[in-house]
Image (cartoon, rainbow, N blue to C red):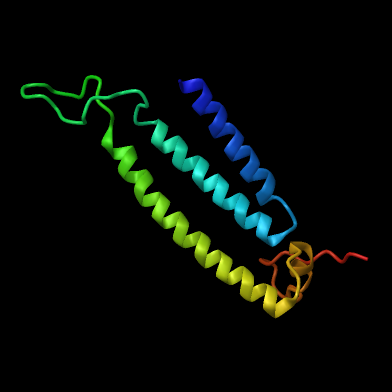
Length: 128
């Protein structure tokens, strides 16, 4: 059961990374959402997949034997909410940026940056 989940995890993170490196702004946002969901799946899988036992410690026992760990489940639930809010906020910013500049190409958006005046900001490469 762990191998199909691991392959799904790898596929989701690979697709998200590919899309996040795209020049289109919407593809970048979808890629970041996919990477976030892949990391959520990784956290969820860390708490045991096949255990049907509730996460309670028996009386007199020192540790959980075969029960699922509830901490990764709680972390994933919180991360899902945070990533959804971040995605909504990013989409609103992308729509506003598209309205303001008229372009969703990240290379054109990078070229629209003002010139670097201090050494800490990288200079924009001139493209013909």
